[in-house]
Length: 273
Image (cartoon, rainbow, N blue to C red; front, side, top):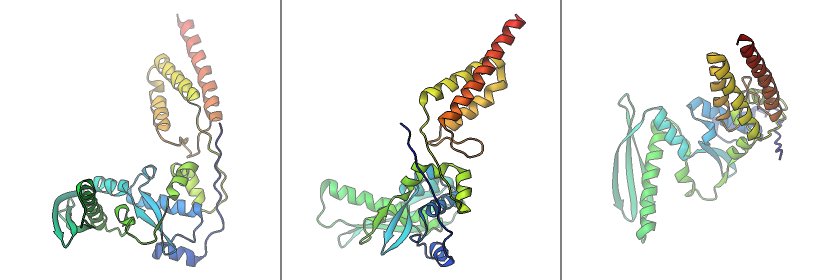
């Protein structure tokens, strides 16, 4: 069944709203598509894959802000080759503390602590609390050594009256995070209507089979075409070379074109015989 999602931008926000977003980190006055654009650009600036949802949104006293999820700190450590070189643990007056030390390839080091109350905890509850402290320490030191001031996911539950707003899920449903062309249009605050129709897997397999047949018939001529096809189909919201979402109609047109090419190739082969 066809699924339709629409994305529409509104008027460009007033300078005061932009200032609040960029300087104070308050995104509450931006429109949803503008927040999507902000989310995308934040990921791009850090080299993070937005499809893994490295960030989510949290409301703190009326202010909408980004916070870093596990995928964010894991990717940062991998991308920047950050090593956690030591974890020191101690208990002070019923508080379990873990001090994590991180080190960059240049030799720069940073430390951060993760702390959780464990007074009266036993068994699995105690073990979970201790693991949470270690997780906090590792994620906090990762953000610190990267020079980022985001709130970490492990800290969200301890913030009074905080409300999570997972706008990144809505971003995925529109496909906005995978279409460069759409993001460029969102940056310009144009009105954009995006229709997403899940690809028919029978069409995908049919086109894949045609490309494989043409590769066999024409030799290396279609190797790159097949490789590009497989790469395109591997992402959640396939887009063409112009950054436009691929539809089932596009697939049917390509199938018709490649069936014609296959027929011509087979005819040429018979004539040579």
